[in-house]
Every structure is written in C-alpha cells, then in structure tokens.
Image 1 (cartoon, helix red, strand yellow):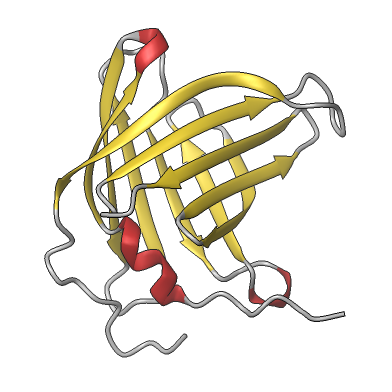
Image 2 (image 1 turned 90 degrees about the vertical axis):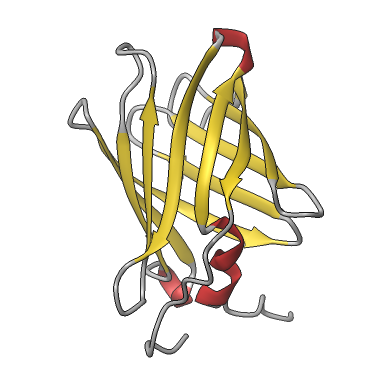
Length: 155
C-alpha cells in the first residue's frame, strides 16, 4: 500500500494574506489573516467577526500531527481550544475533528486563481456520529501575500 506523501509547509503559502470572510446565511462578515511565524515553522491564523455572538479566534497551523501531518491548534474568545487534523492539497483545504463533544469538518475549495475559498462546515451531535451541514462560509482575498516567506526553517 502506497503512503501519502508528507505535507510540506510550502503548501500553506496559498493561504498567506488578508481575507474577508462572509457567512451568507447569517448575513455576517469578518476578517481572517494568515501569516508565517517569524522565522517560519508555523502559520498563524487570526479571525475576527463583526458580530459579538460569534467568537474571535487565533489558530496555529503546522506539521504537528502523526507522521508530520498538518494540524490546526484553535483557540477562541470563549476560551475554547481544539485540535483539528488538516489536509491542504489539490485546491482543497479540509479540517476535521472527532472530539469528545461532537465531530466537526470544514471543507474549503480554493479557486484556481487562489483568491476565493468556498467552504462548507459540518457538525455532528455526538462523537463518531454522522455529520450534517452547519453553515457555508466564503473567504475572499483582500491583499496578496506580500512575498512573505517562512525564512530559514526547512520543511
């Protein structure tokens, strides 16, 4: 059985920059930025939302999973902390967790020009249970990545 190739941090460069985020069904918007930690090694994601009932969040993305797989370490303004397994390949960004409260999945499709991510968020009602549509989200690039790179850290 062939093993999947190990992810490289360079794959995350497509996310770097500033994005407007919208949740069409909730008529709400926000901002999300992705930038490399100084010196490289991890991608920092910061998300803010215009409505107080939605949490602001910071996430750290890196190759911290088993066999060097990507993970997103998520923290928000409610005090919630979660770890998601993550893949990013072939213009598809997937986050998944089967946590002690409920399973969640984010499936983001990145446009060919890299400037739009159309995402579907799903959740279950119990661990290991089936997932159902929760809401949709759209990321629209506001600023290009400014040529920021990870620095001397290898992949």
